[in-house]
Length: 104
Figure 1 (cartoon, helix red, strand yellow):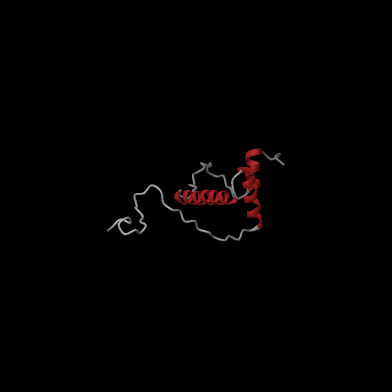
Figure 2 (cartoon, one colour):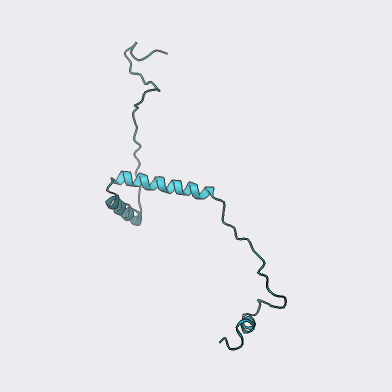
């Protein structure tokens, strides 16, 4: 492989510390409520609309990845240790037993 200097052609050395950044331009259609919130964030943060949109998208994507990595929350049932003979089927009867007949 020849360097670009030998044949007067520009070359790109992958070890170069500087390289050209190609911007990607995309048209987004934002809902009114999202646009309003982004504009408020621009005012609060003092950054450009572009910087704000990119920062918000990065945070949202990172949060989504983090939430997917966590195992789902599970509730494990435990024995409440109710005394034999007590039924939870009739709440009125249970309240009479616990609080007495004058609880109403």
